[in-house]
Image (tube, rainbow, N blue to C red; front, side, top):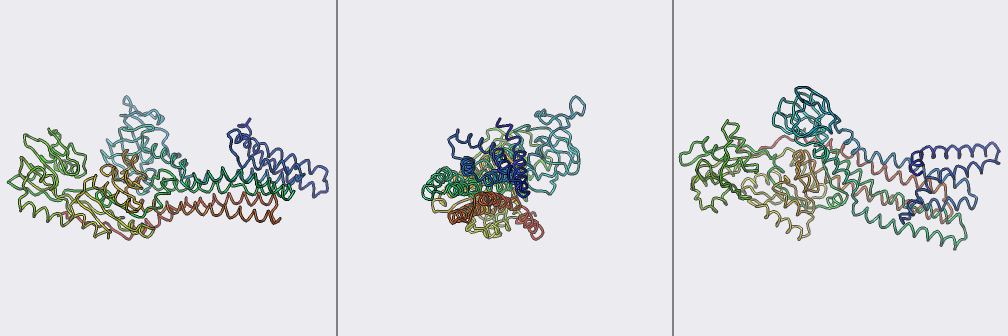
Length: 639
């Protein structure tokens, strides 16, 4: 029965409206005999869905707005105010209809994301090309994607080259060039080119599916303000009912009592916080920023201190080998081969850079080293070709008792002062060479930090495991307030704890892997998503899917705007109810007009929240200006 009524709710509203108009027409034509009957019929028809919802709420021991309206309508019928009872029920249903339609727009970002989900895949099976539903794709399947096609699952390119629009994942509309061995993500579109991929993640394990899941969970989660308002509404509604009874006993005016009951409904107040939350989180998802819930949005808006990792956060995280200096008569390629073999077991970005450099020179690094010992934050020790290699920073050399000659120390210092990270390489207890690696500052770093300072960040600090000379160069280039170099992951954690004890509200941004402990310690952890790594998506409160610092700035501005929007909604709701109640008590606001204004206030609150959906367009304009104004700022020595 309830399902049937809900299914035809819009038609019930329309019939009720038609009967009211028909009743007014009869009255104008002087046929007043059937006017009351028509209005009572309109009231009864429109009251069905309202009273059923009130009954459902009562069974859950909840004091709902529908119950207040039902009581008011019964009262209006009792005092023979048929026009008001009909108009009130119609306006309530019509308001609910408009409310649903406008609320759908606040969730449009999520709906648009879901609509972008791929439906089918073109597989190569048994030597034939066949289309299958995307649910039937399994790991290891060989998939063809042509220009204009959607990537059905996460995978790696095995054939071809293409430009992919990854906006659904990263928020970036500029197509990204993808070649053999590059990762591609479900939901992205091949803008130009042809690729064949091998499926690696399918179904709910794809990055796209996880984004949808995270956004849905985030939009359902409640902010602190929302939780407070929910508790307030649970107390407020019964109090209003009691006050209306008190008013009746004082004034003996049932009409006034009923009007007070309806007008004081907290509809706009209850809906004000969640719609802002939903619109804000949806906006973030559309722009490649995953904000995991209303409470995080609230906390993020209060951040006043920013702590940033260097490599992969302030810099691009794509370091290159800029120089290889050997000592003790070692050949350059031989040193690179030995060090690269040792680093094949390392997940550190500097280690991977050395391996990549060796592969670029067609040096065979398929042999696996023995007795590998990764010393976290310092380097690696391994046995390669019967040689003991120690590769890492000065601390590791000192800890291993390896003497650094004056010549090697001077060379390392010279490289560090021009922005390089000097990797000491010792073979059988002697320094054999120094590999210099450098990275570039992100193009958008300077503008992103400037924007965040304008929006309320008081202090920007860089924490890095890199050497102090390179750290100083980056810090000076970006005008940071502080930097601290040569730190281990646990040092970063302690530093953030100290900041919090001093009263700072701290956001920590890192690559989501080495910085995971510091990210977890901060008030707000921000991960540079690198297209959505599992670790970054799970550990951080906020994930930047495109690895752009301007997304960080956008997320921070969005959190402040969302909280401001929420406060505006609360102010609007309380103000309108306050003014209406004064009008009711003064005898200037009647039941139907009060209900009309009440419903309008709900729509105003929703429309105000919808402004958050357009917030990205403004930020996109700023982003475009940045790209046009600023070029890449290179601090490395590529000589």
